[in-house]
Length: 492
Image (cartoon, rainbow, N blue to C red; front, top):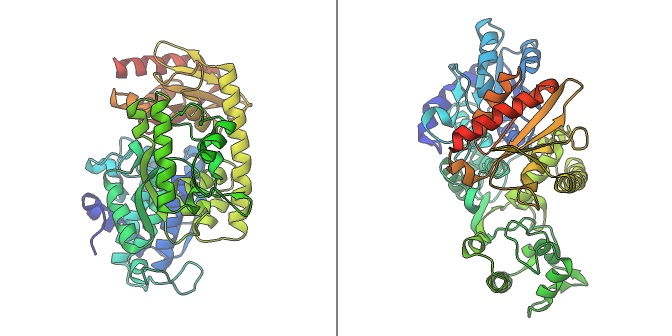
């Protein structure tokens, strides 16, 4: 069966054949939601193809991490959700015969290629908005199922695979489309409320395999798990006066609806409502927005495409792609990628409970970080704004905080925001966030972070709307100057 992205078919097939020829494989992946789902997809595809492998995670694939990988006795290394941007370094070890790299990534490639390189950017597909790292891993998984001679209809725990789609979806790995969608959503690729480009083909395969359901729904975070009042109170992407950030206002709004909003003394969740009840709440919310003077374009953003993992329990974080990706990010940001991978691979006991504990901690830290940035504000240059959190915000979450703080009082959405946090005694972690509107005007933070960091002896990259770098602490001022100039040139 042909893969979901025809433009990548030949590359995916070549990568899959090389994996099948390997005695064993080292699977190396990034640790964010996209990286964790990438690793989970690849791990299940390798296991189903009966290819022995070991999984390692890296927060950053720098020269030290690549050297450590080269020092292992693995002759074949599969990189997922990173590797393209580090091909110049990886290539040196490849040339020396240390290992053969196979790369399934979507980040901007370095100025070098390798034989087994699966990246949408190489075939004219936007890796920032049309195919994530998990999507690239999914394309590889589909190809691996096609070229593998072993029986792929085996679960990762060694048991028999079952499910509403039967064994066919498992045999060709289409059931892994659900994780690919979680990765894409976690990578902020659902611009305008839905996934686009090659991602759409993956969604279609997931729906056909019976592991995904899609449909128009309120574009609010927490539809599966939050009580209705909190769902509306925390719905701040489209600010509705008298409801958003207003606990009493959200309660008054709901009390005014002729619906059974509590059962057994407990508030119901959005996922508990019938279709008719959802329509009643949504219509009232739109009327409230209109009467409060919310612009029509913003009101349109209240509705988006929901991506539901149909095999997961209703009312859990795992049922909704957005909530699932947030849960994974919480594990990644606290050096527990093993927990996130366990959740992706179906561990619904210890790993899921630990992930929920990490998520609660993650939310507290994000809230404290956003309060700090909003209170302290940013320093504005001609074309960028920035803040230095020092050790007050973890370097693993400072980028998320920066993105969430944009638009708060005193923090502009008309300029990209750059955040610094201490990485160690000598280096700073730099995270940059923009908006899709700025990207449409020419902003490419991947270029900004890459060029500005290398100009001061660091390194960086990422996507046009979100990117990062590591730089020597002593060169922060020079980095800011370079970044400001580069953004100015892009937006002029």
